[in-house]
Image (tube, rainbow, N blue to C red; front, side, top):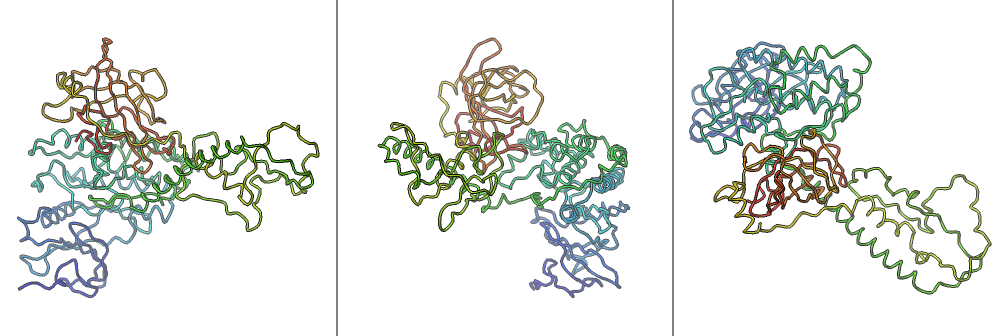
Length: 617
């Protein structure tokens, strides 16, 4: 007999009874389980159900029932104030074939992200909160237990400010049986460690390879979480369709230190966070105990620790492993803005041509002085829409235009005082003097300035279109294969790393520059091979001559191609090398993107779609 949908734990209604527990409301749900607030004998509990039955095993690739039992095994081994207690477990509705559930301590509070946004905590409060989280991790690690999915969504904060690490469904403990056949354990992509992603990439063709999770992996995830709370912005955030780009950023991009994002953050605290985010796990704290000691030594009781953290309105938190990309409406609005800006550039050029043509016509007779209207002075320096000489600001989502008056247009330059405007000089210009043509009658002056102002603000001169696709010349492809720079029978070669260099200069980048985010403009560049671990036949120090495209602001990625390699012995050979998408670093602007170096590159047989991770595919 087919069971009623109401018996499925995903459809329980308030008032339903489960082994003496009374369902009150749904608290949360995910791909593996659903959590309800339930009461029993006047006390509140969190009742978590697996969404698949035990009998679903062979067909349940997520192994939902086994994961729930794994979570129970972790929690039964842990007794800590920042980890929820377990009180009961069972199956519903049948004892043998029902849905597994766990009754645990109910934690009243918000997720960490919501708590940070609502309460705007001080630096001292955030420091104490993460000190408590480090203490909880230390207790778990000493028991041989790893959480493996630390992120803001899995940290609840009580009204008193006390944090609790929840959702141990992806957890693991010593001597537990493996559950999955994947290279990596379950987890949220944006919070995975660089070394785990590197392992998965290097063992992609080895189905039996399994990554061995370490305490430093949990500490890295905690570092990402700490960074996001301190700065109010996501460290890494891409959709499911952009996983390759996300993984590349986690492996390669060095984040901007928190104290450079928010000057109020003490440098020692920023250094602790950056140590947690080290690409090399050996550079991180070896244990959560070491992290606790570092954090406990930071607060010097000064007033600086009372500074409020930033509002996190722009902090987009990936709540699930399969995350959707940015909203289509947001992407559309950005592209509409750039369409308007491009149209303004064209309009500005048309206006200039029209003005030039008008200036070539015979000047109209000069009207008598008493009939002439005083011209309003209008210069690029005084126009309110003209950008300053510093790098342009972040573009607004919509084009703000001053509206004209119903009668005469208002002057664009404010007067210094309220005295009546003086009449123009009575002196007559020389008979043959050239006159600047006035706008057509009835046309507001601001209309003539909009295309120019928009063109200046949008940086039309630096707008870089995506490079077109095309095939690498056959002779170049053959030469690269002969040198081992392309895989035999494949359309791409092994990865190597280069120091990007600066466009607009004839000097190559130095042999070993510090890895920083630097402002780049599109154009010709000379790069230098930095690491050839996987392509020994390409010597370190080889100069690569190519070109950089800064990319579409909607994609926030730049692209580089190199067509000539200058070997250390002076020989020059043609190549077809392409970079991975170079993601814009924090602090980038549409006309001044910041890129990190070194960057990954590879040989290709075809210049393809530049947003593909492997350009030639």
